[in-house]
Amino acid sequence: MGKLFFILLCIVINICTVKAQNINDSIRVLFIGNSYTHFNKLPDDIQKIAATQKIKLSYQACIRGGYSFKKHLQKQEEIEIIKKGRWDFVILQEHSEAPAKPTKVVAQETYPYARILDSLVHINSPEVHVIFYMTWGHKDGCLSPIADYPIIDTYIGMQERLKTSYLEMTYQNNAWCAPVGMVWQQVRRERPDYVLYWQDRTHPSPLGTYLAANVIFSTMFQKPYQTSYIKGLQVEQAEYIQQTAQKMVLSNLRLLNINR
Image 1 (spheres, rainbow, N blue to C red):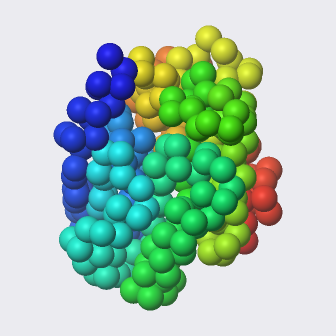
Image 2: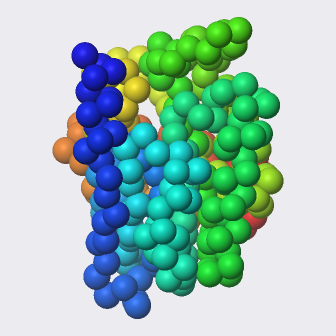
């Protein structure tokens, strides 16, 4: 059931969306990712958090279910969107399993395409901040186990592989990293009753998406904030997520390669 739904989801999610009002007077953000960015409208959440801080933010999102960096680069319409330039931030989210594969495989199948995307973005938007969106391990370990690579058979193992790969991509490209997976792990440990996963044990619940939105917003602006936008969640949950996200980012600026 879960795998069937995931296959159908990959077929359905094939979207390049625009949500830009007063675009010349806004911070311009481009999201490149897949269903982890699409679920529960992550870009909308970031935009709404920004609005409560009196920050005008417009965005465009290239979201295609199951896509990797390599596949995004094969879409000419996405190349043209990048080439439009004048982006202030570009958020890059790789396939949920790709950076968790063995080191040699990641070096061959992920890092080169991260570099190409980063370079293409900077050629057309020289002042841009590229942010690698570190995702989280699947709830019970990778849903696609790899023979002779049991490291990712558990949540912790998969999370550590993702963390390492995303930080490596960040350093290789002198980008920033949004430590969504690190905050996810902390919340799992401190608040095991919080439901971060959707029923397929990989995609985010609304709370999981809210977590990602706060981490990415904190990475973008690196300042303490409190937002009245809580996505219909319980107030206590929302405030805990906000504070945990901010603390993780602000306490790890060097690790995340964020130069203030």
